[in-house]
Length: 190
Figure 1 (cartoon, rainbow, N blue to C red):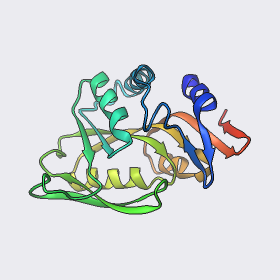
Figure 2 (figure 1 turned 120 degrees about the vertical axis):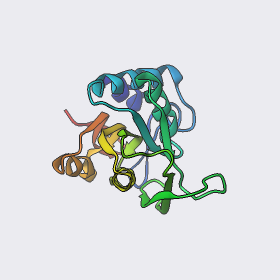
Figure 3 (figure 1 turned 90 degrees about the vertical axis):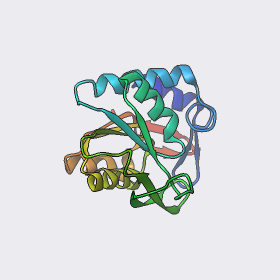
Figure 4 (figure 1 turned 180 degrees about the vertical axis):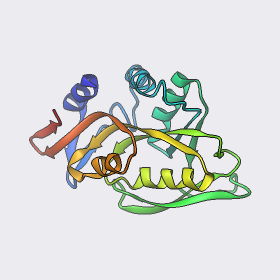
């Protein structure tokens, strides 16, 4: 998606540790008009995939997932990073390592909301090391749900995680594919 690449070049900032700061439009401050464009593109890409639910991990993926869910006309579910008192009963859980925060989380989803009859589109803001997607796929597997694929705003191709997921048969569609990042800028996959 050329618009995403342009937005990254215009507003993104490369930070130490292969971190791309896009807080001005995607994470902390959300450009809602652009969010709508992203959702339309993901809905177009997955229009024929039979998706009946969108799944993400809190927190940065929620806005994108909600917009995609609205565009597809399906419910949105997010995995919580910590079990809370409002998640009662039985849950599915998976360990996920956050690239950005360099922290492990035990993400949970109530068994009431992720069902064997679901065809799930996984949505997230970044694909770095693939841990978030692997955790979400584990939750779906535990539930007996089908994974239609993954919709990613920005993929860091230099980690190889996206290519590994594709090689294993997972459909991954990203709006921007970053080959490399340095203080001098960002290089996108042609």
